[in-house]
Amino acid sequence: MGRTWPYLVLLLPPLFWAGNFIVGRAFASDLGAITMSFYRWLLALCLLLPFAFKTVRRELPVIIENLPILTTLALLSVASFNVLLYLGLRDTEATNALLINSSIPVWIVLFGVLFFGDTLSARRGAGILVSLIGVAYLILSGQSDHLTVNPGDLWVISSSIGWALYSLTLRKKPSELSGLGFLAYIVFFGVCFNGVLLSINPLNEPPIPLTLDTLYAVGYVAIFASLGAYVCWNYGVGQLGAQVAGQYIHLMPFYGVILAYIFLSESLTSNHWISGALIAAGLFLALRQPKHAMASKPD
Image (cartoon, rainbow, N blue to C red; front, top):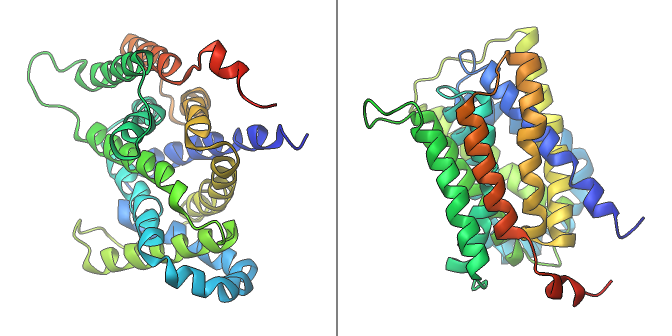
């Protein structure tokens, strides 16, 4: 069970994050992107601190010593990912956003080659190209009469790229820093960063409406899509690596399409099917290991 546990744990983050897309789309007109992200992480921080305080105090010298890399990780994840995603969900359907988000494993492979010295075979290169064609098709489909694209799709792409860089940069997280201490720092930094943004309020967002539905929405994204998903994801990446963990992200469309149909009455169109098939084919090419490589792996 010990060897299979990381694989099972990684089934949960895509489910929790798919729910985040549904909530983000459902409340796009009621909650601003910065507002939603700030209160989400503020609640998560309040829930996390009682468990993490002693750990953070003990590991504070490690955090201070590695502040640049930890701050970079916090910027790429907690501080920016959900702001960019919620901005996108104002203008694009959750189904679109989920399909675009499923390209993250391809971005991980691509940026691993460009910035981290990973190897790129012809098969992986072809897979990256096919998947990116699928993303481009989804964005451009229905735009034949003019060259404009849905700005929401572009915001979602930017959030996906940031998450891919975060997953790869996790390699540089200091090994002596515990998962709890790391999570506490990036959440704390994200709250501070989003708090500054909210005080400046560049998007002129209204105050958060204090309704029961809003409290439920913030509660879900704080407990499940924030703390639960990040703990499971960071554990899985630490045990199996970014490229293996990244493969689980394409479960999000499977979970998300079902949730979008139930809660948002969204349905799949032919454009979704075509782009989804291209992205999936690209993922298969880019992430499938040759048999001789699999045979050489230790049990």
